Image (cartoon, rainbow, N blue to C red; front, side):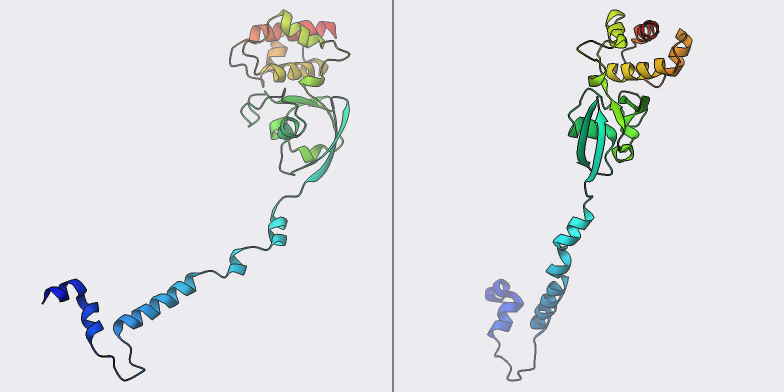
Length: 216
């Protein structure tokens, strides 16, 4: 084999061969090229099928549902994703960030608020379920510029350290008192057990709830 054949290979040798006079005759290379082109074309998806219509895309998106609430004594109207938790609506749409997002699984109590006077963990609650509800967060607990009795007791008894759990602790404590579960330290510990303090400020918290129960 000459150097020319080494460089050009089979393609160079075929290129120097005279073309056949039969128009229907196909070389092996031409047949493979045609087959490859057909396979490539078949693999390209139809543009209309690959791109959903705007109407279909819009239908796939969750629509905002109108929601009316009374939050900290103020009427609020907004549109929410039906999948949004009450916690996320309070923090992201109404900008009430005092309610904290802790575990986001209902286990730590950091997101505790009052709904129609009853304490709940807002991270496990869909906002759309509370149409017309009256909600109280830590921002709305004080009135006329004065702290709630439990807020004052937390300061006096140093019921917090880092403070992250404090809003949920206070809101849960208010619910605990209104439910009539603050008759003794043992009772307070039991009914406040859903609120976790990672700093371990439980003695001050219990004392604050017991003290506030006598004032309200």
